[in-house]
Image (cartoon, rainbow, N blue to C red):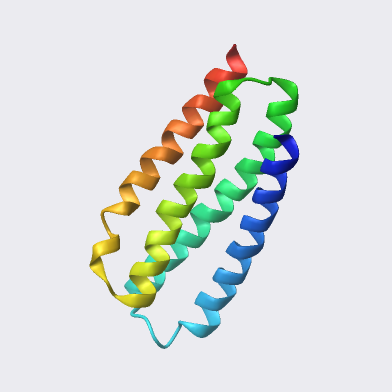
Length: 121
């Protein structure tokens, strides 16, 4: 699992950098300043959790167990839901993606708890 989480984290960081550049250069005149800020929030949280996944890869080698593995998958799915729904909301204007965002956020929060508890055990 260490390698899987490391690879997913590195790929997610790559996407976050690309999305950030796209937002700064490609969306500047197309989104309102408020929506551009929302897009940037999605990018920022994706990068945080890409780095967290790289951390999980090391934690899973140090403290292997279900909680550490669960934290990794919660970061993966939570990032997809949280940042992905924000990207879709900003790019399409479809408000139907909005309810997915807090579900992703809750997954990220639970992931952090799993990581902390997994390291304690």
